Amino acid sequence: MTTDLATHARTLLDLHTAPELLVLANVWDVVSAQVVAATPGTRALATASHSIASTFGYPDGERIPLDLHLDMVRRIVQAVNVPVSMDMEAGYGHAGDTARRAIEIGVVGGNLEDQMKPLNEAVTAVEAVMAAGREAGITFVLNARTDAALRAAPGTARADVLAEVIRRGRAFLDAGAPVVFVPGLTDRQEIAEVADAFGPQKLTLISVPGVSLPARDLEALGVARLSTGPFTQRVALTALQDATTELLAGGTLPASTRALN
Image (cartoon, rainbow, N blue to C red; front, side, top):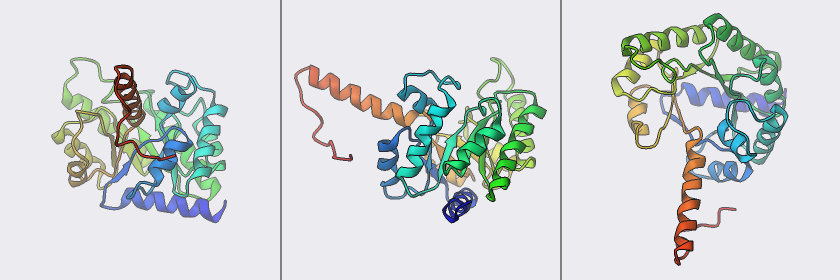
C-alpha cells in the first residue's frame, strides 16, 4: 500500500460521510476524467462501466473483457490526482478478486451490483470486496448497489419495493459497505424513507435527466452521494450529434466551444 492510496481512500470515505452531498459526474476515458477533475468543485471521480464498454464497442453487462476495462480505469487513475471509484458491475464472477485488481491500479472505491441475486450471495460478495480492502490496508469505499427498485416487477406495491430496498441495503451496510446505491429511486418521499432507514449519509443515488430531484434537494434529504452513470457520456454525445446536425444543415460549430483538451 502506498501513502497516496491510503490518503485517497480516507479522503473518499470522508467525502461520503460529510453532510455535504458528494456529486460525481461519471467519466469513461482519460480526457473526460481530466475535464471533470479540472472542473472547480470536483473532489473525486467515478467511472461508468456502461460508458467504458460503449467506448470500446461493447454492450453493458460485463461484456467488455475485464483486462480491457481495468486498463482504461488504470489510465484514468494515472491521469488525475483525486480519488477514483470504479464501477465493477457485478464483480466479473469474483467480486473480491476484481476489487483486489482494482486496488492494485490505484482505485479506492467502487460500485457492486447485486442483480437481485439471493441475499446471502450478494452479502458474501460485499464481504469479499471489503476484505480485499482490508488486505490492502484501506477502507474500500464500496457503493453497494441493490436493483430492488430498478427491477421491481410491474404492479408491485411500492411499500413492498421499498421494504426490499431497505432489507437488502441494511444487509449490505451490516456487511461493511459504507454506502448503498439505489438506482430507480426518484420520488422525494421514498428517498426520505430509505435515507431514514439506512441512517445519515448512507444512501447514494443516480441523477436521471428530466426525472431526478436537484442535487440541493437530495442533500437536504440526507443523501450521501449523487452520480450520473452513463448519462454524462450521453450529454457529451448529444452535444456532438446536435453540433453535427447543425453543421450538416449549413451552419457552424457552437461559438461556446472551449478548448478543453
